[in-house]
Image (cartoon, rainbow, N blue to C red; front, side, top):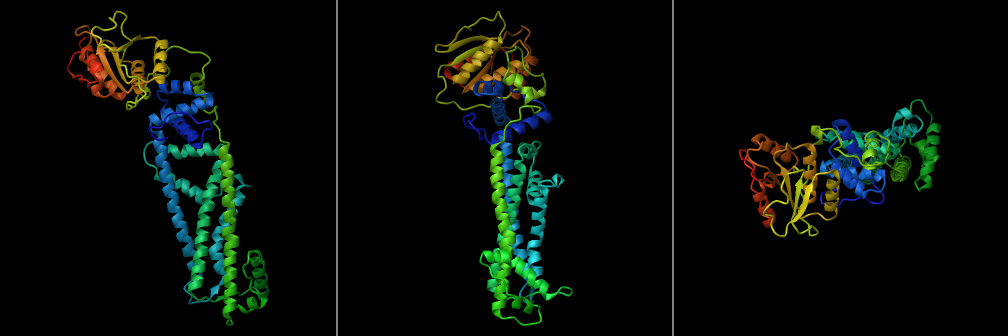
Length: 487
């Protein structure tokens, strides 16, 4: 969800939407709820059902709080970690093949070589199969869980751990996590085994090797039966099986012809391909198909803590007056300035925000061509103005506030919402010097507006320079810290 994308929700929400919503839910559970009056209003206007409104709220807040960028950074890190593990798997597979065969100076024990190449893979594969029967065994995907652990270790920042945790929470609710981690694990094992097989072919093509079996306790009949048993399935794929006479002669006490060594090479390659690579490839395809099916069935659990509490605000049975949420630092409003757009309303707009009843309005000297929106005071007036700006954003907006009032959270939130919808938005503090408006109150306005994201140049000391900006579109004159506001 990069910046600049037109907001909205597709007909079928994707994993990214649920992931972002879960990340936001965990963040609010840890650090407290965010100020979201504007985002809730937009979600209610655009969403069709409660679940979609929850996802829309998460999308708007995620963009504002940069949680979407947090997920994007974690995704890039996870991909790099996966590429690193893939490279390590390829090198490990090649090294295993070369180590199992040696440098050709000694005869190769075929059973020991086969065990060296497929032993660990067979144990890991068996553990994965047992994980379906034994719940305490977890997902049984060592490499998949190693990848997930590595991505958590690579994450940096106070909120960085939220992205993988939220992803695990979303995927675990529909059993998709097991299959995704299984796909990663089988994919890495398949890459290692393919590298092992190609290295085996390359080494056997470039060097001369002798093969034998050695034993102190077992008889030759045992090796004849074992060779035939292991070679039966590869023979169905076209690989050769050494005949009984060749197996009996491969006891290390007799010299074998080149044709016998070629038979053992084909048998060894066939076993690696059939019992190593082929099962991993089949399980990789199965895991991807199951993961895709389970991902398609992922939905939003509306009864989870953090979601259920939103029902009264996103889908209320009736409207209520007042400001939602406690007056805490976590509810400080913010707005993100946007560039003017071609569809913005071209006529400059003027609005009074919660001015005193005896305030003269409209102000004297209102420039020609400026549309007066009146004094916005009630909840209904605020709602109507916000809905109007959402339908047709203003290009240039001047908001006039009462300098004699102490800025509260509700006023700052409304100013931030209106400014976020306008191409250019400035604020004028209207009051009379000596009528109770002090330097401390001016500093309070500056501090609260700066915390909400307003720049010093967007705040005017009095109506005259503000109206001049509204008429000409010139930069504002910043308020000096030691200046009084003039009418």
